[in-house]
Image 1 (cartoon, rainbow, N blue to C red):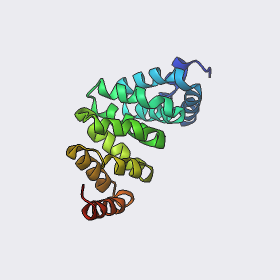
Image 2 (cartoon, rainbow, N blue to C red):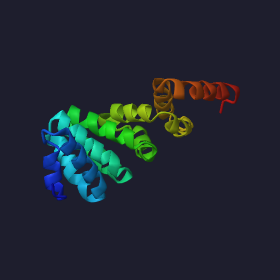
Image 3 (tube, rainbow, N blue to C red):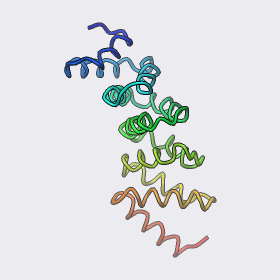
Length: 171
């Protein structure tokens, strides 16, 4: 097996699980040069292929976040968006700020995916969402509160505390 990106991407379709896993790891190790080809294959492939490509993007990490968000804006293909959001969520904390921007910008096309990713990230996203509740825009405050609520245990407690504090100290 060679290490050219196109050949590694072709290996993601291989019958052997071992070959697919090896190709995923090698693509992840390629870093930024593999991002665009991996996103392209996620946009055209089946869900198995999307899963392996998304896994390689997770290995690449932070540099993949903005290109994934941009690619999500450029298509309305739901499966691609789901896999891209899952990859962004798996990257974790570095994705919080770009996801918060999607929420602040009221990017309706991506909102549900940003919410899913923030909920999946969980506890590390709580503080930035609490800060978002301090926005002068009541709609932004409400979106942040709803995300914290939807997050479940990591977000609901801090949300309740923030709301109690707000009641005690209204602006």
